[in-house]
Length: 165
Image 1 (cartoon, rainbow, N blue to C red):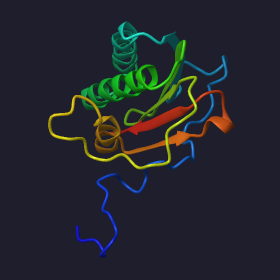
Image 2: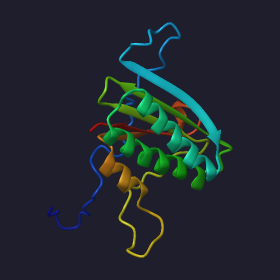
Image 3: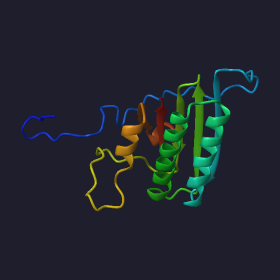
């Protein structure tokens, strides 16, 4: 993609940093079990070992809800990245997660930390030999849509992603 002189190009989609939250709030306890909308909330300690627990939890739920393997596999990568970012880049004690399946072809993921939120700068490609710095670019490549809910709208920073086949 060519850019105008003096303007930098970005590999991040124009959806980066959007804040409209596409996630409806939790189902009422009286929702029938055959409802096409299923969800779960959980929180885990902000520890490296919890990343695997979050990944296992989302894989179990996706399987239980009958989501395609492609959605499950992508969701495992996405929650691993979001959870890891929450523990590496904040001083959080816990990380809260919410997952919600709508129908059989859409999974929404929210990960909320206790941090101040993302910086205003756009993600950029990491150096070839860097061990870190590709997370949001990976998220951008895997998610149909994603965004950030500013901490002034909730406790901590929430990053959400929508996964579709």
